[in-house]
Picture (cartoon, rainbow, N blue to C red):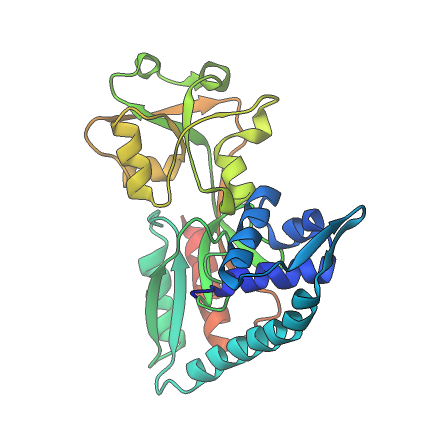
Length: 292
């Protein structure tokens, strides 16, 4: 039986809220994705954790017995991760990343961080889009480069605000336009982030500019999957202006899109975390961002 920490966090949130909708809002994931993960956990355990009632859900006897164990396990895991980090002889700052950063931000910020924190190492960690916190929620990252919106419990500093454009096969009829009104893209199949990405998935499907359901042609878990799907003709994808050059490749065209609010790239860290290494990296990025 291979149970993941994320599934246990989902169980604890629903057990504390006794309502899947409230728990999904608290976790910053969609309600269907949360329900699916709970069913997966129940199948792995071999027993039901919740029963549905008019007001939401209630714990089964097995769920009641498991809850204090899960709560203790998660608290001990968080404490253990912090203890392990504190035991490192030189210290390591773990930076979560979901896409390439570019924009002249990362390298200069790292130089500033090393000046402020001599002897500290930096570890770059690639985090899947199924974790919209960039590894901050489970403590596997200290800071993370994230596109807004972000889950609750995080602080952010916006590094770049950029228009959203569209990447499409270079033979697409709309590629003949210099810029594309979003209305022309409504019925196009879109490449989507996984459902676990929650509001971040909605943002890159432009739900904020829609009153209809987007057509999803393919669900991708990594940038490589996204652009392979685009060049294969499975759909189009919204891309931040600064990412267009980072992910430019043969067989793909990028065009600005009108009628959409811009995207915001931010550095994020956990609320209440004022550790010197985290603050040093955030301050270094602030200085770089004001120059860009």
